[in-house]
Image 1 (tube, one colour):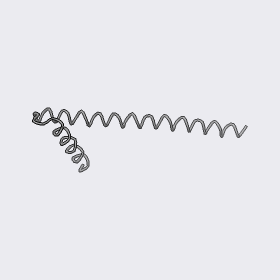
Image 2 (tube, rainbow, N blue to C red):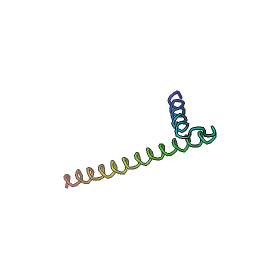
Image 3 (cartoon, helix red, strand yellow):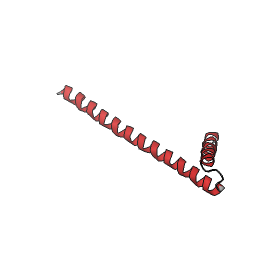
Image 4 (cartoon, rainbow, N blue to C red):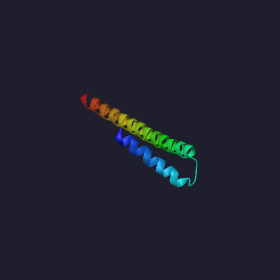
Length: 69
């Protein structure tokens, strides 16, 4: 939970620095959008890693099956 709090505080500070004098609601929304963007980027990265690993595993299985015959 402390890590989540630290991340949120960091993103709030970044958004606040980027929008000097902005309303706190705007800063909060910007911070949430930044967190969501980072989450979606990581999610896509993980999905790509899974696809790559699946392809590699399929290739290895095919090679092993080919060696049996």
